[in-house]
Structure formats: C-alpha cells, structure tokens
Length: 220
Image 1 (tube, rainbow, N blue to C red):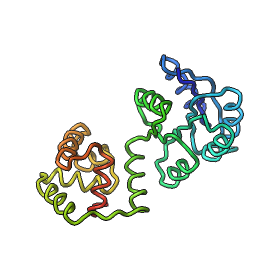
Image 2 (image 1 turned 60 degrees about the vertical axis):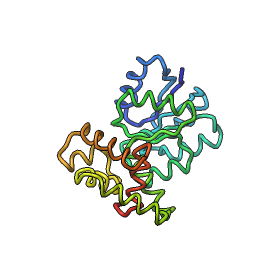
Image 3 (image 1 turned 60 degrees about the horizontal axis):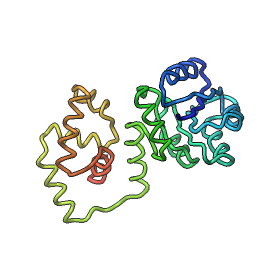
Image 4 (image 1 turned 45 degrees about the vertical axis):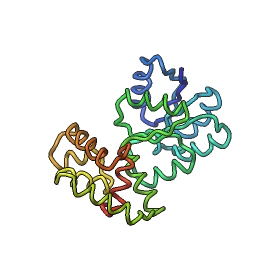
C-alpha cells in the first residue's frame, strides 16, 4: 500500500482528494497539509511514500517545500498536482527533483495509476505537460535530422491524409488531443484513432516521439 500525504491550501481539494483515495485499496492517505511549511513538518512525522504537492500556496509554495524535503528526505517521492501547466513551473519542479507533474483535472483512476508508477520509480506527467516538456527540451537541445532520414520522413508525411497532416502539424505546436479535437471540431476519440494511424506511419511508439518529430520538421 502506498502512503500518501496531500498538500493543498484549499480545504475542498484536500478533503475531496483524501475521500476519493480512501476508497482505493492501493493507497493510504496518511495525512494532509495546507502549505509548504506544514508539508515539511508532516513529511518528517508521517513518513509518506509519496507527496501530492500543490504549487501556489501561502506561507511557502510547493516548489520551495519540494527542495527542502528533498534535502533531508530524498527517499520521499513528490508529485506536483496543480492547475498550472506553466513552462516555468514545470522546469523548476523538475530541477527541484519532482517525480511527477500532474494537472488537477486528472481522473482518479489515472491518478492512482500515476501513484503506482511513481512508487515504482517511473516519472509521470499528464499529456499536456509531456507535450509542453518535449517542446521545451527540444528548443533547448536542438537536434539535426540526417538528410536521408529526413527524405524518408517527408515521404511518410506526404502519404498522410490532409486531416492527418493537420493533426501532425498541431502536434508540433504542442497541442493536446483535446485541444486538437476542439480546433478541428472532432471528438477526442476520433483524434486518438487518427493518432494511432500517424504513429504507425512514422513507426513511432508514442505521442511524445511524434510531437518531437513534428517539431523537428518545423511544425512547432
């Protein structure tokens, strides 16, 4: 069972999340805290496996608390759980040692799955964050594509349908499936189906690889 500490300045979020997770046999909520300072104290007393940490809080923000917790208790894993997919927050959280960055609109099933993955040592982030992070990393570390490989990739691109090309281009701009669906007036399920076809066309395993490729080709 994964021991979890919930840190958020909003009582409704703390209590609501605690209540939802209490029904899951995989998770034990060992406590809650209302700001970064109380989170540090609670982490020392309660020894959680994972902390779900909000970012914007009074007294002490979540990123500062994350740094201080990691200084003394590096064995505790921390997932930032916030409403903001802001580039600055993402980068600062990762530099401070966060093992995950999730948005608060995440379904409870996905949250539990993320807790399990992080508990096992795998970094977790919601789709919007992964796409944004991929774009950030790519801009900071540009990588040239071999000319012959580029010809093959362009050939694959030309074989896409007009709709698939448009989706591919939106990917390069860092858009999520939900945003693409809204932009194209289609359902998210339809976009996912197209995405499967596009992945197969470029022989890519996942959406992040595809987004990086689209960015490299100049669709960012």
